[in-house]
Amino acid sequence: MLSPLAEIRVNDNESIESALRRFKRKVQQEDIIKEIKKHSFYMKPGDKRRAKQALARKRQRKKMRRESTDT
Image 1 (cartoon, rainbow, N blue to C red):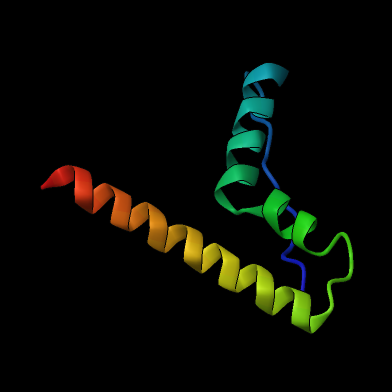
Image 2 (cartoon, rainbow, N blue to C red):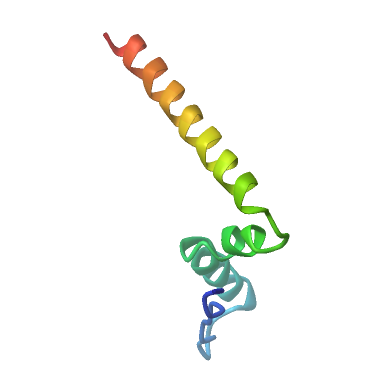
């Protein structure tokens, strides 16, 4: 389910540029772009599982690399 769109109110004495900056920041904080990309195409359940496992392996390798350089 897609989250509701980000909404900001433009103040009377506020420039369009600053309102746009606030809007972009709000969109980024709410992960709207990430959610839209996730729903932009259909991924079979098996493909989703493999992608999730690959991401977990990548995180694990990064963690191991970080721990080996720290000690």
